[in-house]
Image (cartoon, rainbow, N blue to C red; front, top):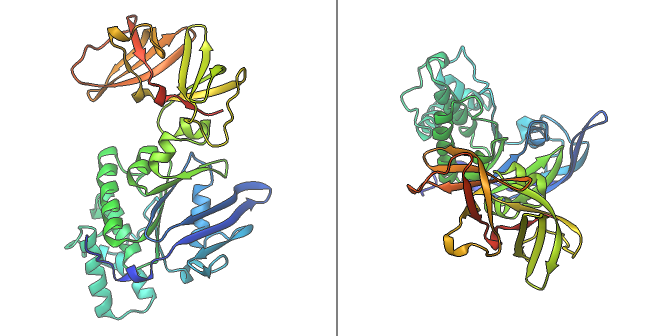
Length: 370
C-alpha cells in the first residue's frame, strides 16, 4: 500500500527497560522489559487492573516510572513531559470538545503547535479523508454517531504526525457491529501509515485480530509476549491458556513416557497421550509426577467408528449442546470431567443433551503446561 503519512520517516521503536510503577505500596506494574518495534501494532492485553493502562500512561508521559527507563529509539524519554514526546493518543471516552466542530477538534493540536492556517486546513482535511470523514468538518460533535466520534478522535491523534500512536480501549463504548467496523478501520490506517501503534484492550478477539504481537499481563506482571499464533498455540502458563480463548485444563499424572510420547492419566476413564515436545517453556515432564494439559475445544472432533478403542478416543455423555450456526459447542462428561468441544457446522447431526458422543483428541493438540 502507498504510505500516505508524512510523519513516516520519524517513526520509532519503544523500549521499556525494566520499568516498574508503584502507587504508595501498591504494585501498578513490575519489571516490564520489552521492545516494541518501529511500525509494529503491539497490544497490551489482560483483565481489568492488570496494569496495561498504567503502562500506556507511562509511555505517554502521564505517569513517571518508579524505576526503570523508557526510550523512543535512542532518546531517553522517561521523565519527558507528554507535550515533548510527539505521541498521538486516543482515549476510551474520546475526550472530544463538544463545543467545537469536527474541524476545530482535529485542528486543536496543530493550533497549539502554532501552525499556519493554510497548513492546518491542509492537514486537517487530509486527516479527515484518512478516516473517511471528509465533508464532516462543520458538523458538531453531538451530530455524530459513536463510531464517527471515534474516528474524529483518531484523526485528531494522527493529524500531528506523531512518532507513536497510543490507543486506550478505543472501542469499548461501541456496540458489537460498530466495534468490528472500527477495528478494521484502525488496522487499515495503521497498515497504510506504517505508524508504531500501541493498543490497550481486555478483548482477546480484538487483540488477536489486530496485533503483530501481544503482551499478556496479570496483576502488573508480564505473562507472555508473542505473536497471536504463539500466544494462542503455545501459551506460557495456565493463565494465558485460559485467558486467550477457551481451553480444557486437566490435571493428571505422567504414567508413561519415552523420547517422543507422554501418556498422562487424568482419571480412570480418561488417559491422554501427547508429543513430548509440545510443552510450555521450562516444563520438565517426569514419570509419576503431576502435570496439567491444555486442549483447545476446536481441536477435538467426533471419532469415526473405525477409531473406537484407539488412543485419545473417549466416550462421554453430552451435558450441553449449543448450536450457533457457524459451530456446535458441546460439553461432554467423561467420568468426573467436562470436556468443551467446538465442531464446525457442516450439516452433520447435532447431538442433544443426554446422548452419547465419542470424541477424538489428536496428540498434537495435547499441550503440557507443567
